[in-house]
Length: 102
Image (cartoon, rainbow, N blue to C red):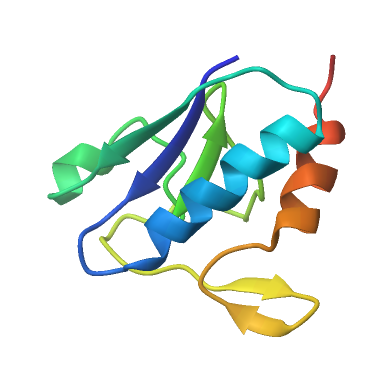
């Protein structure tokens, strides 16, 4: 399983999202390293599932899919139990990871 955090420099939540993702992977019983991919230009978005920074991708697919990937470098907002936030909470990450096909 390949797990990535796609991010841009302007959105600082990617670091915390990655830390939460590492905890969620452990809680879900999944042993996979988290990779970080820094996107600098719109050309970097080609062929990715980027939907704003941070986008959490498992095997090339957005863990929290949206209608379409974005074509610009932008921050992402997630709907969480605490309201709109710059990243999903750990519980959401665990649930999404456990919902992945085996």
